[in-house]
Structures are given as structure tokens and as C-alpha cells.
Image (cartoon, rainbow, N blue to C red):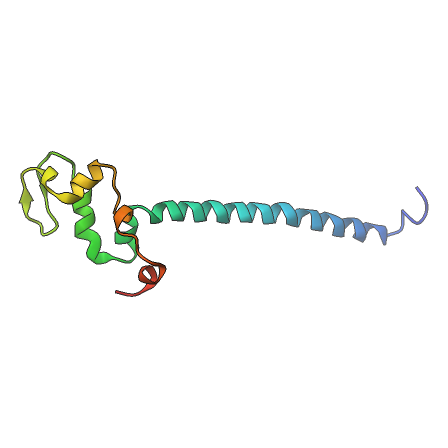
Length: 115
């Protein structure tokens, strides 16, 4: 090595390069976490449980009806006993593979507005 490479001034330059190399992978990991969390939130957003959990407390009775087992005794949204839950439209839709958001597609302004 030459005398110029052994000087203390050469060491800080190498450290600065190493610090710069760490920022890229850290930014990539943070971006990946944000993307995965966003995708998970979007998937949850499309589920009936999202509506009742976050904004629409009045939707709780509808969600409970939607989640009733098919062909059994249950309770409707007004808390009335039902001898066969297949008579409830929400159960019929769920059994057909329909989710609430398949028909009830709100606009963005409806989603963020207070009710």
C-alpha cells in the first residue's frame, strides 16, 4: 500500500460508502412491508367484517345474520328466532359465494363520510 492509502483520511470515505449501501436494502424492506400491509388491508377491506369493525356499527346485525350457519336455527337482524336460516337473504347470498361488496359498492366519498 502507498502512504496515501494508509492515512486516516481514507478510512472515513470507506465508512461513508458503507452507510450509503445500507440505505438501499433498508428502504426496500420498508417498501415491501408497506406493500404487504396495504395488500392485507385491501383484502380485509373487501370482507363484510371490515364494514362492521371500522365504520358501520349499525351493520353489526346484518353481519351477524350474514355469518349464520345455513340450514340451522338462528336469529335474524332484529333478534327474532328463525327456524331455518336459509330463509334469510344474507345467508342465501353467502352460500352462493356473494359478499356484501359484490353488490354494495360505495364510492370513496361514502366510505370516508361520517354517518
